Amino acid sequence: MNETKSIGSRTAADVASLLRARNPLLWIVTREEGRVERQLMEAAQIANYDPRFWDCATGVTDYAGKTREAGGANATDPSNVLSMIRASTQRQVWILRDLPPWLRDPTVTRSLRSLARSLTLSPRDEARSIIVLTPSSDVPEELAGHAIVVEWPLPDRSEIAEILDAAIAALPEELRERAATNGARDAAIDAAVGLTAEEAKSCYAKSLVSTRTIDPATVAAEKKRVIAREKVLEWFDPLPGGLASVGGLDALKGWLEGRRAAFGPRAKAYGLPAPKGVLLVGVPGCGKSLTAKAIATAWAMPLLRLDLGALKSKFVGESEGNIRKALRVAETVAPCVLWLDEIEKALAGATQGAADGGVSGDALGAVLSWMQDRAGSVFVVATANDVSALPPELLRKGRFDEIFFIDLPTQKERAEVLAASLKQYNRTAEGLDVAAIVKASTGFTGSEITALVPDALFAAFADSERAIKTDDLVAAAGATVPLGQTAAEKIAALREWAKSRARPATLQLDARSAAKPTLDL
Image (tube, rainbow, N blue to C red; front, side):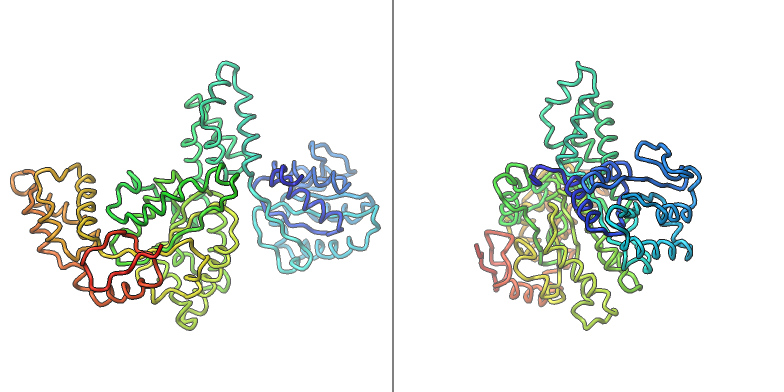
């Protein structure tokens, strides 16, 4: 029957089991005080405990806020409530809302620790448990041996669906049918997954007020606030035009298109596993980062960038904690695309004998553990320029769905990149000798070809603000020393590595190099 229960109800059942097992102290991590308290009431009922609530403003009350204990209204000091718990002879669970700030006082910490020890000796009909509600998972060291930490999950699809139905049901009858049948129900539910119940309720209400319907885009925009609040990830606006804005890379694009629908409810019902991610290795400036941005657009998902280097700290364990927090945030926003740019730089210390004191090793461990065990629909796009700096553990089969090698663009791809760049500046290739420009840009990276257009526009603007000509673009190419020339040895080494370790991102290869990787399907 558990399959039909929401994730909140399943967590409440787990807490009920902990209460029946006579665990004296539970440390529940959540920002959703109201929602979690309602579900803790379920747990108390299952375990046959009488619930009591405490905060530093109202003292001891029942769930409805009424004072039922003698002296409860005056027990606003934590020492008083701990004394009441100790003196009680009833089977109760005490839910304490504001306790963590008071635990800075050694006396309060000592009192709670001693109480937790003594509660394990109480008779079964006088069993008492303490639940600390807090947004922080930092348990004082003195209590770590007594407290069981439970991170309460955010609402899942079934709970979000109930919130959506309640929002629609509250509408006037003439608006109710329009809001419920605008064809966006599943998308609106998916867009709100990752928000708290109150956040979901608020943005559904905002959508209904502003558009008179449930608009998934309005709901999804709320997730930006989640990212800004946590300060461990960067929200990127996806690339306009999606994969069509990326020139070439037809093999990679085809692979991505084949996995586009794997995140939908029909794919889940079919039993299709959600794609894990892709590692893009190749020549700098050839479209790896651009592709990451385009995937998010093509799949209509938020794009989050994780800068592993920025989360490093000189304190032992803090870097790993920051990374784990960032990955948890990504899971709450899922389905989403998580972009790890130039991952080899952030993890370089893990392959250099702990040259950074083990910080990179901790970061690598946190990333690998999450990639292996993650449950959310987070598609990872990692990019790397120097494969020799990548830890071997990261390249093991199963970390990513596929590893693609992105080489210098072919003749056909150079023409596509040129067309995409011209379009970006509201120009077309009409009247231009594309073949001549493509020939002049032999050995250029995609970014170098893209840069030719603004250079040509500056020259044309200076010359009486005329339209750009082929000569402008060819001249700009002639003034550039391409990366294919300055880094020829490194590119050759990359191609040699990719022969047996990666799939080429391009199906049709021209004679741009003597060592051409073979397509491994």
